[in-house]
Each structure stands twice: as C-alpha cells, then as structure tokens.
Image 1: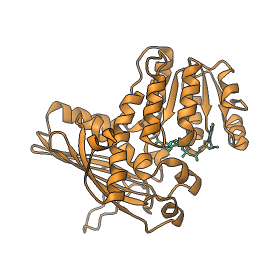
Image 2: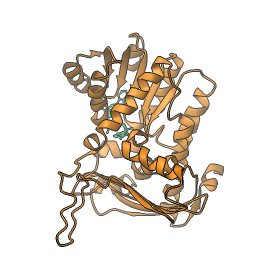
Image 3: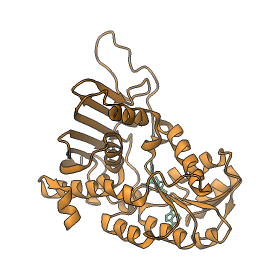
Image 4: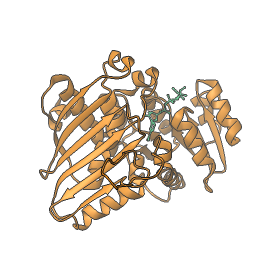
Amino acid sequence: MRIGILGLGRIGAFHAETLSGLDAVESLVVSDPFADAAKSAAERFGAEVADSPEALLAAGVDGVVVAAATDAHPGLILACVEAGVPVFCEKPVARTIGEGVEVLKAVGGRDVPVQIGFNRRFDAGFVAARAAVRSGELGKLHTVRSTTLDPAPPPAAYVAASGGIFRDCSVHDFDIIRWVTGREVTEVYAAGGNRGADYIREAGDADTTGAVLTLDDGTLAVVSNSRHNGRGHDVRMELHGFADSIAVGLEEKLPLRSVEPGTTFPAGTPHDFFMDRFTDAYRAELTAFTEVVAGSRPSPCTIAEALEAGWIAEACTLSLHEHRPVTVEEVRQA
Ligand SMILES: NC(=O)c1ccc[n+]([C@@H]2O[C@H](COP(=O)([O-])OP(=O)(O)OC[C@H]3O[C@@H](n4cnc5c(N)ncnc54)[C@H](O)[C@@H]3O)[C@@H](O)[C@H]2O)c1
C-alpha cells in the first residue's frame, strides 16, 4: 500500500522510518511546510515529496499518517476523511477539547476509519498489565501510579502549539490508566509549577505537574509528569491491589539510580527518549494502522475513545489554574 505522511518533525521522521520497514507498505509520500524536513525524509526513505496536504491526497495514497504539530490535527484529519482516506493521527486529537469535539462531530457518520496514536496501548508491558487487571490476579485495585518524565523540554514553538502539558504529555497517562484499568475517571486534583525553561512559563504552561485522579470504583491514580528529567525518559506504571502489585517499565533501562547498598538494578543505559522506549510499540501501532487501511480490523483507538483522555486533561488544566478539585462531569457540562 501507499502511505502519506503529513509532518516530518521528531515523531513524523521516526514514523517514516518505521513505515518504510513494514512489509505492507510499498511506497511513501511525504509533506511538511518546512521543505527541508520533507526533503530529508524523502532522501532517507525513498519517499516522494508532495508540496501540500492537498497534493499528497491527490497522489493516490491508501492511508495517511498525520504527525504534524497538534494545532494542525483537526484540519488535516478532516481533509483526509473528506477525501475518503483512512487516517492515523498522533495524539492529541486537537489542542483543546472543544476543537476535538468539533472534529468528532464532523467525521461522525462518515465511513472512513480514524486511528489516534496512543502508542502505549501497543506496548508489551502495558498489554500485560491490562491482562493482569482483567484476570483479577491483583485483587481489588487501590492505587495506580503513572509516570511520564521527559529528559528535556520540547522547543518553544512546540509548547505553543501543544495545548499544555496535561493535553500534550499527561494525556498518555490518562489514556493508559483508562485502558489498563477499564475504569473511568470521575474527579481530579492537579498541581504544577515552573522551575525550568522560561518559555514554558511564558506560554502559560507548567513544566512539572502532579495529579490525583479518582476512578469510578474508588481506586486512586497518581500521575506525575515533568519536562525536565536529567536521567532519561521515564515511563512507568505501578498497579497495587489487595492481592498483588505489578509494574510496567521496571526493567534494566529504567532511568532511576538505586542508592541501596549492594543493589545493582537497574544496570542498563537509561532510555533517552520516547523513540527508544517505545520502538516496538510504534511498530505494532503502525502495523495495526496498515490493517485498518486494508479493512481487516476496525480502528483500535477512535476519536471518541481518545477524547475521553482529553476530558481528563481538561479537568486537570482547570484544577491547576483554579487550585481546586474538578469533576470530569463539570468540564463536560461547561
Ligand atoms: N505518541 C507519541 O509518543 C508522540 C511523541 C511525540 C509527538 N507526538 C505528537 O506528534 C505531533 C508532532 O510532534 P513532534 O514532536 O514531531 O513535533 P515537531 O515540532 O518536531 O514536528 C512537527 C512538524 O509538523 C510540521 N507541520 C506543521 N503544520 C503542518 C501541516 N499543516 N502539514 C504538515 N506538516 C505540518 C512542522 O513543520 C514540523 O516539521 C504532536 O501532535 C505531538 O503531540 C506524539
């Protein structure tokens, strides 16, 4: 099949490399307003370059991967759906939940599949955690801890287009908490601050946040995020139940250093970014998209499903700004 890629920045170039290695993908067409980004991907992966999203859609693509900046997602998703072309779009659906809901309304009822890129759903550790929760082997859950710490902040332009740390980064934690536990979040209480890059504060965003989420069965989920984690890219989840406790990401490349005498774990080179932490998950996710394009499976993460994490991000953003607990129902009603 022939796949188009819109946006060839950090993740778009990485997806181009992954797609070029999939058996199902015969050719790639790429487009980015930053011409050098498209040209470099074309040279590396033997892709054709299109001058615009319209030209890419006219180039006979079977499916499109949208990896453009977040503020471009709604327009690009709609352009693909209107052209009748299945689309994979990186998270989040849009910069704000209002825009996300508009996208959902606009594509609703159209028979064109859309897959949103919550890659953790394709990671072996998170898949195993979900199975453990569903099997009942942990007993009743009481606490979930979900951590995403980036080694260094993204550039100012990225932050400005991102919608803020809860919608951009923590949204991965929110989605995977729902997916692993099978529960919905009812209430959040968030805090955050800025002690790093000035441009994050100037954009009205926080560089480090914490949030306590209450799930609909009473389980507490504690979410921790930062743009500044010198030791590496740290993505983990702990699930504690009345009968047993498990951890995702507790492996040799975990970017943590034990100070316990005689303890050598973890001994590997710490993960330095999302590309190396989730290489296999991205491959599985894009393989799933080729199956969606081929019509052999439905979208594994629809816009409606992705927006559920968006509502939690919205509640956390309000909670941070107003220093108070916020129910998800309150932001849905607003
Ligand atoms: N799932 C994940 O793990 C993951 C990881 C990183 C980024 N992302 C998401 O991917 C998106 C891109 O992130 P990034 O880190 O690659 O950003 P980036 O800033 O490195 O790259 C974005 C690229 O999009 C291009 N672009 C902007 N508007 C465009 C348009 N209308 N058409 C085509 N290209 C356009 C820019 O020129 C730039 O090259 C963001 O929405 C982000 O949330 C997801």
